[in-house]
Image (cartoon, rainbow, N blue to C red):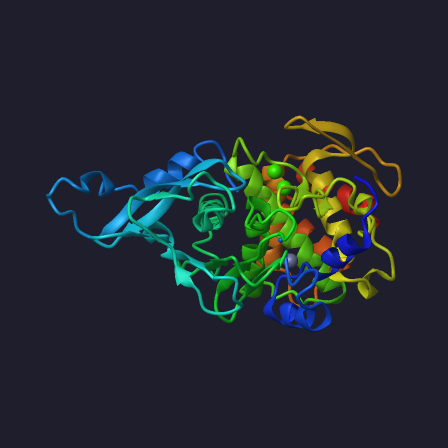
Length: 394
Ligand SMILES: [Ca+2]
Ligand SMILES: [Ca+2]
Ligand SMILES: [Zn+2]
């Protein structure tokens, strides 16, 4: 990637994940640039359909008069091709509401910053041809990615919803006007996604949805602050889980990668994990001043740690994308695979980290998690230590 433009820099700086952050952003950068922007294994698509499909839809129009209930829809998304959707049949129309996943709902914010209207459809086929010309299509992206996120957290990590209480979030698309950003608001337990003014496309991609909903997980677990090193670890956690969710989706249109937001913007990814500083903004390694930087720049070492732990250092091709991850001390690292790396990070996040966790304590937290999961004498434990050292956290 090339050097970021100043507008890009602005966007990086405003890509925040909380309501408070949004307020601050709205004050400093109003209507112009950015108001705010940020899953799945083989079988996810099938799982989504299987989890909600009861065959109710098939009875429509037979005169039998199928009752209300869960249904299996088909969505035409902007970023992820044709996808299955968990929907609800009221008896006369379908809603973008997923009874199989805590009644997660998706609303059209109608370019406003409050309220919203639940998407409905007469035949359970959503999104037209999957372009911004059809208002439903953005809703398809959000509803699908939110379902994948639910399935990832439940199926892989054993977490029952974002708060762990089985409740689904509300998603709002077409949030604001020319708002190329996204954020999670714990107060309404809702995630909001704008549209990129350049392309008109929604920001509700798999990795950004996974990122934002992970802010909801963080809010109900570690509670990492939004500034300093805890802020960097919070944004890093959201990128780490968001990336794992994108890989879990196993989507053939939005293929798994170690970039964040690569499908959301015309000018390429917002951030990357193998070599964070290539975005012109993020740090690759921990340094004493890192807590004085914005949370995105400060999240670089966390992202980089995760990449090194999962995939190792040096040149590597994954899903036909070339990476080359450096280390602070020139060390050569072997990865333990993304699945183990995610489990270690998630356990550390939900059992050890707190609002004030800094990088040094994150190292300790992940070592404890690796010892709990794989044993204190395991190769995994040793590689966690080596990956932190490789980003200068000792
Ligand atoms: Ca991708
Ligand atoms: Ca990505
Ligand atoms: Zn964020």
